[in-house]
Length: 70
Image 1 (tube, rainbow, N blue to C red):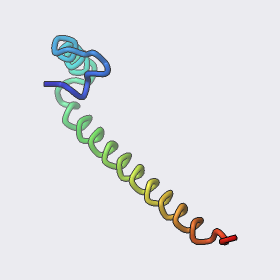
Image 2 (cartoon, rainbow, N blue to C red):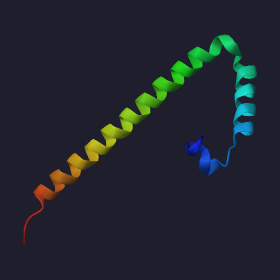
Image 3 (spheres, rainbow, N blue to C red):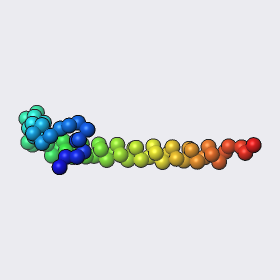
């Protein structure tokens, strides 16, 4: 069910406890805003990672083109 958390060895009971603590800390009214902000942050992070990978590919291909053949 929660395969993405397998490396943390978090089971369903632990996940429920964590979610209850988050609910108590932030309250029910703030959770939608918090979720939206978290989603936007993850989207921007992934976008930045993708742009960085594209730049690395471009730099690598440009450096290979500039190498003199001896």
